[in-house]
Image (cartoon, rainbow, N blue to C red; front, side, top):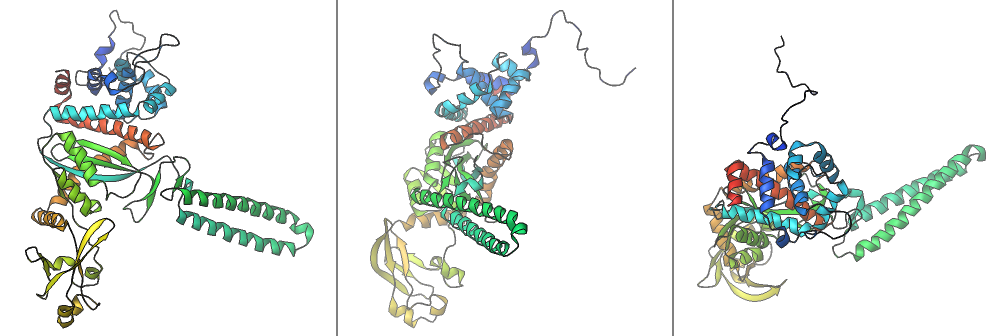
Length: 479
């Protein structure tokens, strides 16, 4: 007698066969997806095809296709062709769609044609989390990460890349011309075939050079000095990995501090995070429904104007100021070593002298006040440690007090940046792991935003199922 667990005979007939519902447990994530989509008002969200045409082949209901996509992204199946195969063999999907198996073109077109409604469905789940009381801590962290686009590096052009490639082609042409001169000096019979081959290579390189020159004009006409051929919206962006870069998009996210749910997200075409703090903080505050919000971000988000904008919308930012002082790098006194005395409107230098206000100017739209005292600097014994110039000038932005207040908050919260990393960085790692080596299936900014929304929705669904459990979540969605 075998000591192994034996399976059933495939040919054994059953008098009362199991129904499909028996194969899906009560706490299966597929049931959560089913209830979530059924409770959505797809008409109000703007999904296409809610009113079927009177003629032609019957269409699939948008509800079925949305369930298919959410289930797919929950289970790391983002490709429309793979979803087509899964719908034909996956019991959970058969249960979820009622054994419907749309073809891959229908599946792909649904995602392409319903970008804004899918993004709205993602926002609707964040609102559900808010209604469930999951955002009791008015603290969030903001971060950005670069995601690879469907665009090879060789298909992206910038002025620097074009200059380097043109130099390479010119060097190759010069090398082949030298080889051609050497071949011409050889006997005709021995060199004839080589000469033809070299001429072919030179002609090919000249064609390549003409294409690069034409691309040079196209790049010069581009607003941001970049052209991508496969995905026109993708941009070259630097990463923190040893100065390397990728061709892709900058994905922003705001994550709540208590349960690490993504409360707001955005996709941008700019590699810098510097202008994103107030925008993402405002979205996070609105999504969480709080009167005031504390936001943690890394030094890449630091901008005086952004800090001021956050204060205006009821957000308290915690962002470290980057050390960009050349004087500090050279071992001299930095601006932080000078103390501003607001009542007197002067700066006190490390040597104890007072630098009065001398002038006000406007640069890049910012009102700047400048302080100095030539006589005090000339007689100061600490001048070698302060400046190599005849005198030290201190510049103060008209809203510098907002930045100073944030610096004091940072001093009182020494673990703020460590907390930020623990909150906001792992969601990006999780989503990139789900995506695999090729991050996106689609091209163009609007389509990429749709894909990110599906990933965020899947991530939040998994998080809430882990927090509450699948059955309590289903009950909450139905009430």
